[in-house]
Length: 206
Image (cartoon, rainbow, N blue to C red; front, side):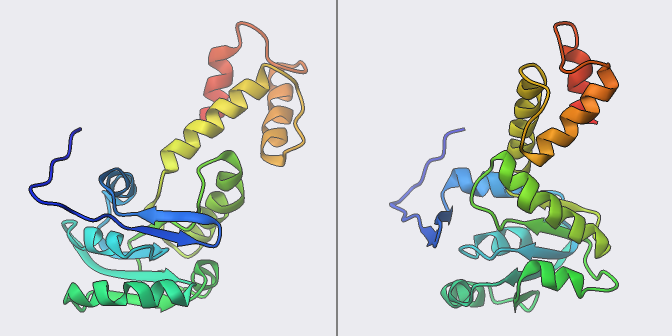
């Protein structure tokens, strides 16, 4: 889509210790919205970023409150003026690590969780951060979950597993190796061959 502005506008970037964390450009706003577009009720957010997401979630129909868990005090200080400008008592910011916050939460107060605490969108990020975070969220009793670029990561993981299945039977990286070992048992041979494409795709989706 094309985005037009009636006057000059400044966009912002948040740079962290490992590089670019987020921006408030239109494409970033869209990828954020995709992750929380179904949010309603009491919403838990991990990662404060520029604060932009808080304002966007508050505009979602049915959202009652937003609690943001952010472990970097510098980010909280940076975004406080913006959050205050929202002039609402529906926002709370907690200075804590999201995993510790979720582990201490019994029973769950939240109806929806939106996570954005990672930099990249590769398979390693999915295995090392996203999957453990989703598991911790569900253990806390929150079953409605969204995340920044979740579908993009799933697509990369699908492509990687599909390629690995048709090139060699074993992979040193654990998330791949587990799948390939199961695939070998399912197919009854060391690796997938021509004609297995549809079956392998179904197994990956499963």
